[in-house]
Length: 277
Image (tube, rainbow, N blue to C red; front, side, top):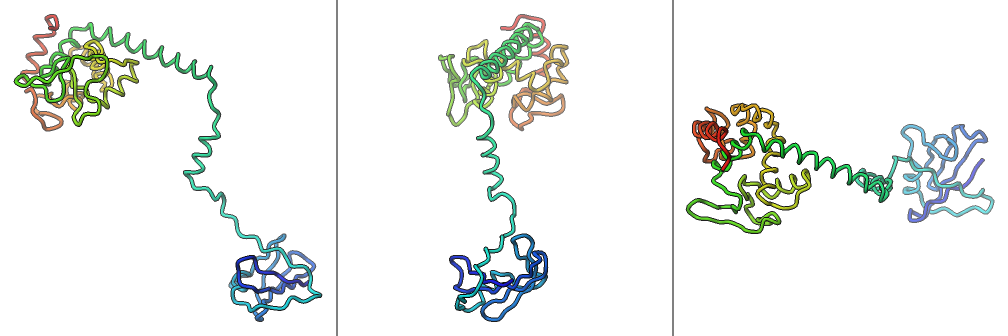
């Protein structure tokens, strides 16, 4: 059967004559008003050109305007364009999935928060036990000695030029260009991570001790320290405290001034047998 294919809105004003066999899967021909002919076949309602033939849209672009015959069959629908999947970008798809995800109920949020609080309480209890160990007490004093810091030290605090704080209710140097503070020179970013991990919001001396002990655990050094194995501890914690040597033959991990290994060893051995100052 035959009919006219009308160009989609926005294209050139042209028509294409379609000669279609009764069999929907048979080869047919599309003839533009300028005489160009393309062969192909209908698959369902979509006309697919044979290899090398012009596409319908290309024929429309080349065709001259043609008079619409009064006896012509109704125009065929535009050929279907190939589908290449979703028009959304991967980022948009991810955002859609995130938005459509099930939102937790208040009860679920409360249960999750209670579980997190219980975990934080158990972790602090473990750290309290760690801090009772003479080896841990001695090593934390070694860190303070190497860093030249006290519980109220601000960045740049030195024996000859004191810079201290007095408000222990929060981290003291938040937003500053340089942030290492307190006895263990904890940085703002490190403090925020430990605060979330332990459920602590102040910067009291005891909180600083707990955080330093947790840093030892985060660095997988606590078990070595509890057994008194200083040589196993140093290379693990040297990236945390620049003023400590990595070993008897390696200096600071950050190539900064550091307390020599022999002094670290002597101080550790001396302090582990006495009460921490």
